[in-house]
Length: 436
Image (cartoon, rainbow, N blue to C red; front, side):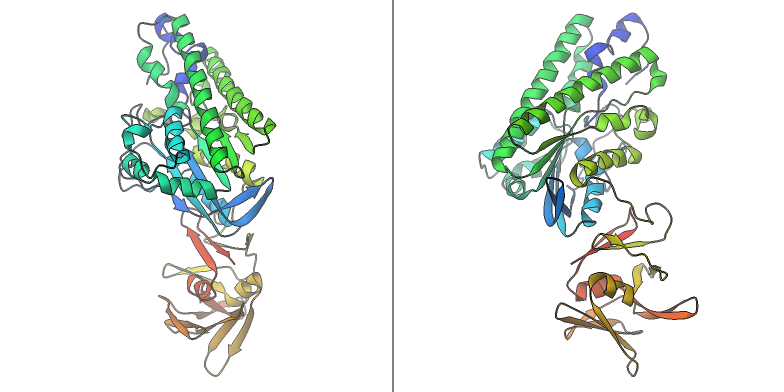
């Protein structure tokens, strides 16, 4: 798409409310990019927010379009997304055991979202892809349609529900613009905004009927065009983005007045003035890049948990980080990677989870006990034992010299599993998360 139209007719296509046609907030995998075939719906762990307090072991459900799916240009059927939902999954691990269910559909409009949620509300076992939205190019849409009953079950259990939707609602203006006057285009844009508001209002209302307790976080729409496209155009685009934000704020305020936990997430504000660094605009696509998805995640996390956490490894200050019960291990005996596994000083792990350690010098075996479970860890052996049950480990425990001290370093995953702890690892964040 050409953002630099300057002549009279072309210029009018991007003026006033027309600028909404350039918003992403979940544009389809069009605009010069190819669809992402076969991308698996994100799954993982997350937590609940009740008011401003997050409770452990809960569920986040993400609804929306390609922004929810984590799409970037060039993705194929073998690509693994790392979008804002995946980052929320990591944030959730800071707070305890949890689960994430991602229902991001490429090309989904607010009408498609309403159809999907309506099918859940009606208790349908499954629907056809066409019943959700005709002509969707997402190759996963049939699976989403067939799994509507499972989606409802997750929605009923959800403690937090995130929604990004709207970019695809206004892209029709691009196709319809030719042959219209500026006044006609503004009228059409206003109609699309009205339709968007009505669809989202109804969809959120149905969601609150399915699950009246969940926190619902509704994102507004950022605009990706940088200021270098022209100062006047840039001003108009941001004014239109503000109009979209006002719609979202109005919906959140309306539901809040009804006693429903609906909050607006101001993604547009995070992108303003940073369009070039946060989007793929020069790849003929206006989806977020990795920095953009992180920006969205930070806005969402602020609404859900009151902040966005980062480990030393994420900040490039450590090779690997270990977070136990929400706290990163701070120790003079740092975790190490060996043969693709994470090893930690046993005493550090035991202290972090409230366990007790022991050492049998005759057999060269360390032990850790927690909650009625005792794990025996022989130095140099390929197996550990948890209450008599043997567990294999690819690399054995070893004595690791740090300064003048030798510490027992144990394979984190094997020992955590033996103790019955929840262990999750993010390769992108280079962080292991341990929860009771």
